[in-house]
Length: 571
Figure 1: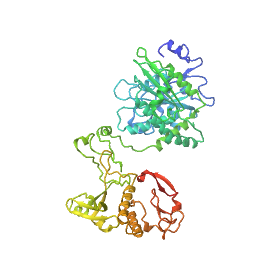
Figure 2 (figure 1 turned 120 degrees about the vertical axis):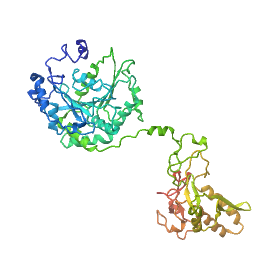
Figure 3 (figure 1 turned 90 degrees about the vertical axis):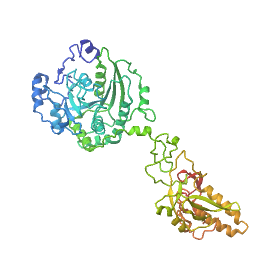
Figure 4 (figure 1 turned 135 degrees about the vertical axis):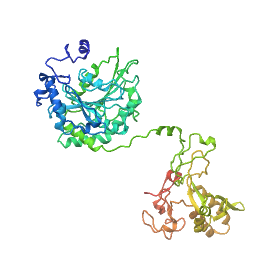
C-alpha cells in the first residue's frame, strides 16, 4: 500500500498494513488466524518465521514440466512467484495434484477458491492482481515493453483469502492462433469462482460484452457438465451456478458508470429478454477513476474478498478437485484448431447481398452490379426446384450434344383463341417439341428437352403463380378445354379433365395410376368414381394419395407454394 491513509480507507488493514495477529506469507499477502481451516497443517518452512530463503530453496527443489513450458517464460525468482499453469499451446504445466500443491507451497488438502482475470493486452491485468492480492509485490511479472509479458495462464496462491489467483494472456494480443487462445481463456474462466474483467478503456468497448457473452454460452453448453463429472469422480460436489463476474473499469479522463448501472449494461450483451448472461451467478460493475495516475485498488480488494467469503453460492474446493477439473477440461477440449482467416469481413462489405430465393446461394458479383447491366451470378450453377416460383426451364438436348446450351422458349398453341398446347422453340433447331394439354408423348419430350432449375432473384422478373404451385394454370386449362368440348358430351369432358390433371400435377405428387389404397385407412381406391367417397385425393403437403374421409383438413403449405388453405391429410 502506498500510504497509511490508503490502508485506513479499506476498512480491512491496520495502520501497519496488517490486521492484529496476522503474519506475512511469502507472497506479501496477509494470512489471518482464521484464513486456514483447522484441519489444514502448513509446513513450517513456508511460514513467515522461516524467511524467504527457505521459500527460495523450496522453489528451486520443485520440478516443473519444462517440456510444457517450452512456449512459456522460465521462472527465475528469488522467492515464491507465480508459475505457469497452461502454456500458450494449451499444454498443462502441472503434472499432478501433488505437484500442484508443491508449486503453490501449501498443504494438498487446503480448500480454496479460484480467481481469474481477463482483459485486453496492455490493460494491466498482472499489475491489478499484484496490488489486489499481494500488496504490490511482483508475484506476477509486469513489463513496460511492447511484447506481451503473460503467455498462457499463470497461477499463485493468496493464503490470506485462500484463493488460487490466475493471470491470463491478454485478448487482442499478437497470437499464432486466436481460436486456440480463446479456448484456453474459456477453460480458465470455467474453472473460476470469481472472474475479474479488467479494462482501461475510457468507454466500455463492445468486444468485452461479446467475450463475456460467448464465455457464458460455452460454460452452459460444454463446461458445466465436465466440471461436475470431474468432481463426482473424486466423490466431491461442485457448484450448480457459474462464477461471479466483476467488471473493473479504470479511467483517467471520463467518469465511470454510476452505482445503478445495470440498466445501461444489460442491453450491451444483446440477449433476448434483457438480462445478464446466464452462466454468471452475479454481475457487478466497479469503476475507478485514476487520480494522478494512481488507481485505488481498495474497493476491488473489498469486493473480491466479499465474494470469496460468500459460501451460500459456491463452496471452497480442495486443490485435488481444482486440478482434476482443469485436467479434465484440458483433456476434453483439446486438439488443433484452424486459425481464423483474415479478410472475411471485407468480402461481406463489398459482395452483392442478394441470395437465390430457391436455393439461398449468394450472388458472387460486387455490390451495385445491376447498375452496370451485369446479371446475378453464382459459383454453383445448380439450383433446387421451388414450386412457389416454378423455376424450371428447358434446354435443347440436340444443342447440348453439340456443345451448346440453348434455353428453349415456350409458346402456347392456340386455335380460335383457345390454348390447347405449347411449342418449345430453340434458336438453332427451331421447334423441337410440341405438347398438348389433353395428352402428349412424355418419352419424346424427355429425348428432346432437358429440364434445368434456374436461380430466382428478388429483383429479377419472373412469372408469378398466384395461389401457389400450378393451381391457377390448372384452372385456366380446365376452363379452356371444357369450353372446347362441352358440346360433345359429359364423358369426353371427364376424359379431358383427367388428362389435364395428369399433365398439370406437381412433381412431388404420386401419380394416380400408382395410388391403389388410401395411405391412412387403406381404403381401396382402384375403382374410384369421380365425386365418390373413394375418389383419390392428393395431400398438398406430402403428395400421397388419400380418400375423401382422410383429407378433411385444410391448411396453407407455403413450403410447397400453397399460400392459401388447401386440402391436406389428417396426419
